[in-house]
Image (cartoon, rainbow, N blue to C red; front, side, top):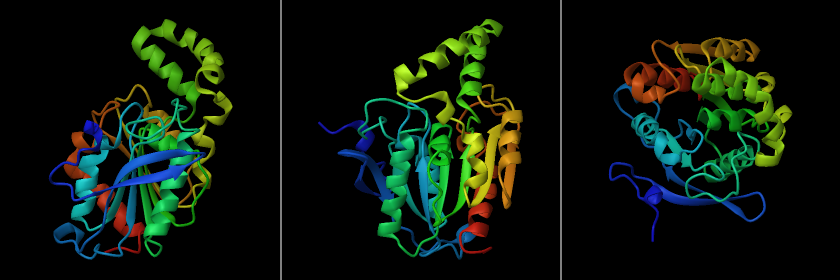
Length: 268
């Protein structure tokens, strides 16, 4: 029986794709071919670029449908994937960006193969952002949007425990971090996106919510400080750890659309 995840929305003209990664693993996703845009996207037609969309933890590609529709209107090609161990993709455990980075690498290789002349952009949300940042730099990636990305897993665990349990929650974070290699097969030392942001090698746009308690605005400012030019920062007023596109759609699409147009082939 076909999973509900794999059922295409009627207004999303995408093709299903299967992308191999690691050893006998595979990613499931949808791919949309770009077309000539109109209105705000005029000039961003075929050849404008391809955008990889990376969802958050314990979600799947459907979280990124709204962004995919927006990018399609601008004429971009789009690839939405289920990260490893999410949705219909294979994988035995969530590793908070470490093994997920292997899936991101495979998805980027797929885009380079399918669209070798296209500049590539990436939009990652939370886990998806960390999975990109923790991977190897890719010279074909020219523009990266990192939304609600934790700087280190230490801070991510402490913030979430404090949110749910109050001040006492922070005292439990060392215990959970000690268990991380046993549960996820990865050490906390490998999960420090803040140390990788400066080496991305592309224009970086960091977005976070002003009221986000999982990845605070101050932590996002620290990430921005570690990034190299060209870079951009947007702290979304009133936003918590939520879907920032859905919350502030008009402003999100204006800012992200302008950023992509500027860095994927020049200002339109």
